[in-house]
Image (tube, rainbow, N blue to C red; front, top):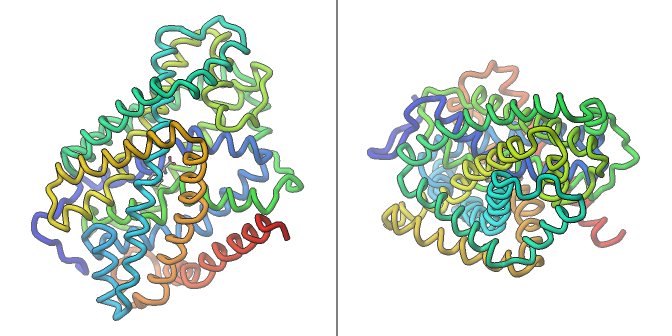
Length: 444
Ligand code: PHE
């Protein structure tokens, strides 16, 4: 076996735990909140195709490289990169990937937790039938009220960060591993239930047309950047999450199969979420392009007039909260594993980083600019940049033989194809999209 297991370093108890944990990291607000609304804003079908293209051409190859770095490094993202740079005879500066990743995770959690908090508020409201039978305007205003109500947002944000910290504080196998083993099956079951509900009660065909009928004239340079950024965001790529989870992966698990399963499940779940959401939106005569409020304004309106609305509404927002929780633990884990390596106890590391995220969350609650800037910087800049550097490092620095040893279950044809895409296609893809978006945002 090409990897040495350091003493006392955690390993997932089962290969399925790795898959569930990484799928849990990948499937989150990105799939259920962000994907449907950015697809709505960017015209539907053509955007969805562009996103699928980015997942296949950039996401899967880079994800394999990132998992590999973790499993070979057997440490948090910073120390994995340090050790792999040493192995490759490359500069220590490559550890920047790990540091930027730790920072990106914390920055994402600073607004992610606020949105997760909204979903908790709507679990609460749905379970009490608060919006059932009310008119559309009142319900939409309800979300506006929540957005103005800092105290209420702070309450749910605090609940959510506390839940995240509790799970992560319990450790990798006892906390994260057990949590995903319980949460993920519930998530799958709820999602299928809602798909059935949308099929029964929604304008299902109209929903499908919206998502899959491609009108490429609607695709702008900006929306291509958004599609790429989202491919990284939804796969939790380029920021150390899949690296640190990969470092807990057993040495005999196949990296390529695991990545294909995770990327496949993540994509499937985003598509199913869209297929559950848009039919309900159309059935209530609402517009799909209403932006970030899609989930919290439009859907409650849809549920309010529908059979079983309170029950399925509750189920829906529980689903959102679970998806967010299995991701939030993965956002903070790279930082915690890093601080542990620097000598902190797991408890102290968890408390410290959680407090930091909690404070940042408060800034996001009070300022839309902070919220939007954190989202833009991480999803559209830091993650793609991290991914680009990972592809370049594994493709050009680590060396063919070392990489081949670690990814040993692929046939040589497929392996070479992957390696070529890592060396040329993925970096070129990221660069081209970056270039165009900078150009458009500068107004050329
Ligand atoms: N992939 C998660 C989602 O789609 C977000 C996330 C990004 C989680 C990066 C971990 C790391 O919601």
